[in-house]
Amino acid sequence: MSLMSFEVPTSPNLRTITPLSGDSGLASIWKSSSNDLFTAPSSPEVSTSSILSVMCMNVPRTPKKSLYVPPRIESPKPKKSKPKAVDYIYSSVSFTSSENPIFDDVYLKEKTFVYKGMENQEFAWSDFKRIVPQAEQSVVATSNLVFYFKKDNAYGKALTSSAQSKLDKACGDSSDISIEIAVKILDDMAKSEKFLIYSTSSFNYSTVTPIIKKYIKMGSQSGPLHRHIFSGYLFPTLIDALQRVYEDEKAIKKYMVSLH
Image 1 (cartoon, rainbow, N blue to C red):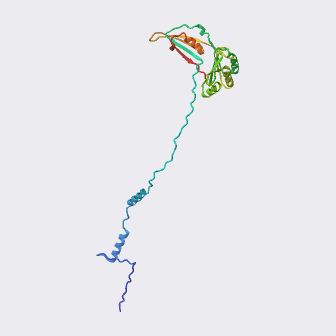
Image 2 (image 1 turned 90 degrees about the vertical axis):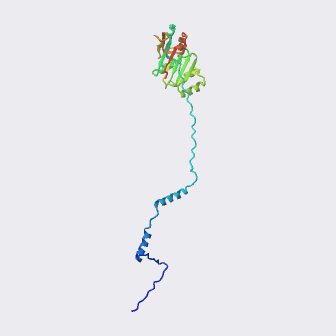
Image 3 (image 1 turned 120 degrees about the vertical axis):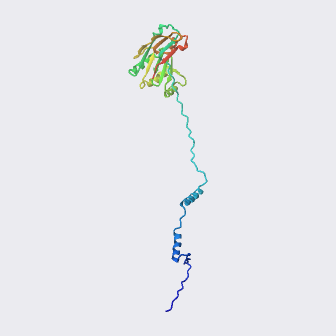
């Protein structure tokens, strides 16, 4: 029986494995495949670091744009006119001094006729308008306006800024106005505003209020002091007359009537 020989064709796609020394052919093939399968992958930290480096290189160099906000400009607020202190009538006046003068009894005979609304205000106001031109002094006060009448003249004071505007419109820059204009302004307010009326002349529904005098003697380091207190409703002319008996101008202390 004759032996047949086979020739193995060579192919470019076939891989030739050279056996390692001391290894059989199959062992060499297995060892080579194991080295390819179990090669350690590259470190993830290195990959991450590389990505961050690329991102940093791609950051645009142009500066960030910010929205322009114009500065706020506040318009100045109009200043409100402050109401002036009302000094047309006083509830009391005291004199404290080392002097002890003698006051004329004529001052104690002074009386003030007072009306405080609103009961019968229509009749009280109507009769007051009749006597105001002849009265020596009078005061009419509302919640925001005060008028001082002295013989043929009237003087107005506003207690609020809105009342000041009304007064300026009626009499301009002058503080004194005619009795007719003052009465007209009050006429428009008589039905809705409460009136306080003080006068040296009597009128319907008014209450007579006398002037009361009180004397106090007190001691001090510099010697005895004498205090004379006059209470009631006192007009400025009466206070001026009382003050004339003193040489010490600092002796006087006045308390104004609350007119609102």
